[in-house]
Length: 217
Image (tube, rainbow, N blue to C red; front, side):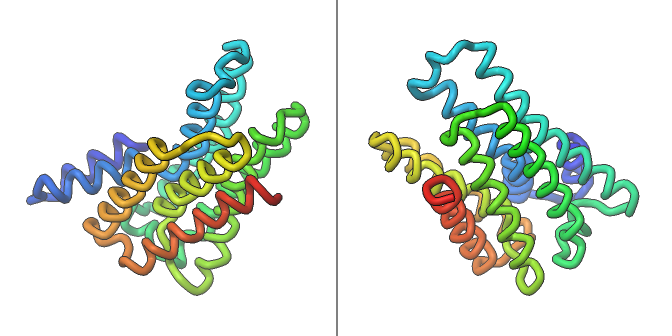
């Protein structure tokens, strides 16, 4: 699916380096990548790396299947059935089915994790991601917001939450994620998929869900 999107970008001539970079950033940093990235950082870049490798890989595969592979495949099939490209799918009224498919997949992942008795600090990531998708779906009834930037805001909110839970200094990672959010938001504006207001609203929704979903739910 990603390769098809990149091929679609290349067909649009002429296209300058800035537009190509913006499209590439938008494709690479898909919202479905965020839960997988969050689990990778949690399990391989913190003290949790002492957990046996097989267990960590099982968790990554589980999360990757339900939050990346299955939603991407379902949305790709939905596009093919309707004959739509990325531009057509970005229309607000056509986003409900992808949202619902993603929510179902995330909810299935969460239920599976509960049945496996995974700890709260792991399931919290999926709870926050699911909450973010539900909020974006509800807001989409009236306004279009950037789910890409909402996902990056989710990472920032999640990092702040884990900082409060485990009492560590997040300044390095926090700076990186804020920079990534700004870069992604700029890319979405350059390719004319969102306005500045939609970008800001998306980031605030993600930030809110990252904090509420991990700390309070």
